[in-house]
Image 1 (spheres, rainbow, N blue to C red):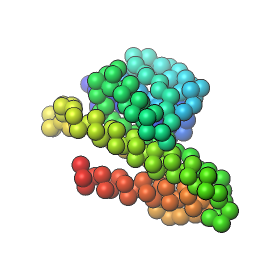
Image 2: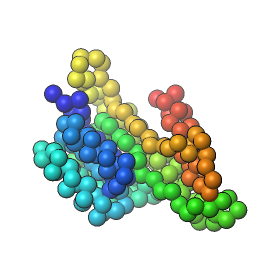
Image 3: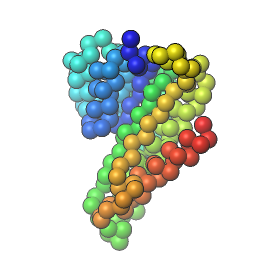
Amino acid sequence: MTLFPGVALITGAASGIGRATALAFATAGCQKIATADRSVEGLAQTQDLITKEAPNAAVEAIMVNVALPESVVAMTARTVARWGRIDYAVNAAGIQGPAQRSTELTLDDFNAINNVNYRGLWLCSRAELAQMSTQTPLPSHDGRPGNRGAIVHIASQPGVVSRSTAPAYCASKSAVISLTRSDAIDV
C-alpha cells in the first residue's frame, strides 16, 4: 500500500527541487502526478525520469506561468479534470533574479522575482486551497481520519537569514514563510 494514494501537483517541476519532489512522489508510489512549469522541455525530461523510475505512474505535464492568475486557474482545472481532486500540492516554482543590491535592482527585476516567488505561490496556494476545501477527505493509510489535502510551500534559508545582493529574493522567500503561517492558522 502506498503512502500517497491521491493526486500530487508540483509546480517548478521542470528542474531542481520541483523535479526531485515529483520523482520522490513517483518512487514513493504516487500514481497520479501533475507536473507544472513554464519549461515544456524540462517537463518532458521530468516525465521521462518519472516513467523510468515508476512506469505505472500517470503524469500530466502542464505548462504554467505561476505569475498569471488565468494560467494558475487553468493548471488547477486541468489537474482536477484529469483526476477529480488535488491531495498533495508542492509549490516549488521560483526564480532567484540578478545578484544586485537594492540600489542597483530595477523595478522590473524586483517585480519579476516577486511575481513568481511570492505572488505566484499565493495564486497557486489560493487555487489549491479552494479545490481542497470542496473535496471529501482521502482515507489515510493507517486508519487515522483522512484529510482533504496538504500543501507544501518551498521557501529557502534566505527567507530567514538574508544575504547580500538578493534583496527581492530574500524578501519574497520571507513572504512565503509568513503566508504559509497565516494560511495554516486560517485553514
